[in-house]
Structures are given as C-alpha cells and as structure tokens.
Length: 232
Image (tube, rainbow, N blue to C red; front, side, top):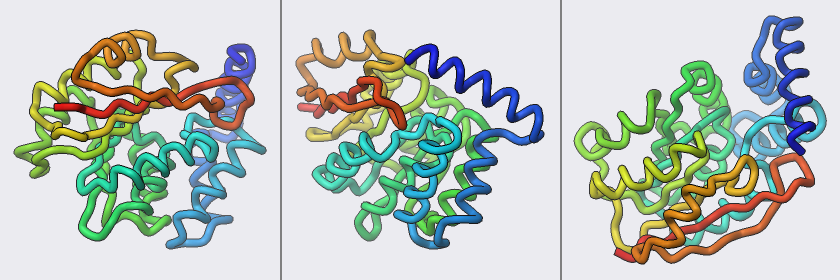
C-alpha cells in the first residue's frame, strides 16, 4: 500500500509538471465538465469516478463515505465542524444531509485546496450550508464562538493532519465547544494512522468510542474510522 501511494505521489508530480496544473484542479475540471450542477450526489459520484479510474486522491471516498453519512444522519447536527476540507468532497457529503438552518464550518490550511473546494461546493449547490474557514485549525478553533457565533458543535469530522487530531480534540474541549452527546468521527486511523489520537480518546472516560473497519479510499488496503461520543 505504501509503495502504491508513493507511486501515485511520483506520478502526480510528473503530471503536474507536464500539465502545469495541480491534481486538485484536474479533479475540479473533470467535475465541471461531467457532473450535474446543483446535484451534490452527481458531484460526489464524478469525483469518485475520477479518483478510482484516473488519479488517487485523499477524499473520504464512497465506502467510508457511507459511515460518514450514517453518523451525520444519526447526530442530525445543527452545527458541524470539519477539519481538513481538501477538495470539498466530505463537505459536500455532509452538507447535502444537513437539515434546514444547519451549517457546516470546514477548516482548510492550504489556500489552493480551499479555492478548489469553494468552486466544488458552489457547483454542488450546498454553499448556503457550508462555509470554508481558511487557516490553521489551532488559530480558527478558538475563534469559533466569537467570530463565527458557535455555541457548541454537534458533530466534528477529523480528516486533516493526523498528528493534529489529539491536539485539536483537546483544544475543542478547552474552548468549551462540546455539549453532552457531541460526536467526533476521525478518518484514516489505520492508514496513515493516528495512534496517539486512538490512545488518547479510547482511554478518556469522557468519551465512548466505536471503531468502524473499512478500506482506504479507492484502494483495497484496510483502514478504519473512529467514532467518539462526548459524555460530558
């Protein structure tokens, strides 16, 4: 699996050089040319098609996406937070399931990814429910209450740098952004892995954890998602 990922990275860099365009921009172009505007499911299917047939990308993907969907539907959040927007795939998955008046705040550090995600989210037609916050998570999380009028978050999707999972989970608690029953869902806890986070969350009496086995997006390698319910 690691060899396959390295092969994808090398191929991506060569393609970027030849085409003078990033992989993320190529995914966006493919969506704009092939998906139905205003149809989030069409956009998701088109991204999955590109990433399974042409170039691998770090979206949550269709298989783990079903776990994400189920969790969002169970929580039925009024305010959701995503750390790691990338191209906007999971933001669109979450956004299409939100009830009227609910919102998703999605945090992206990379300005190029944020620009692609903004266009992707608008094309999918979920821009009224999804707001991209550009910058490092450790700076944005403490601003959520005052700047973005967040009381508490009902659902948090962790899909950014794996070494920030624990720090940002702690920071969210320190900023009093959780209520009893708030739910975290963390992606890629096997590949590339988040052992520090799993050790922290599973040994914390304030959380009740469930592990969902699955596969790495667009590959057969085993991966998993970790759900953690805040008990208060």
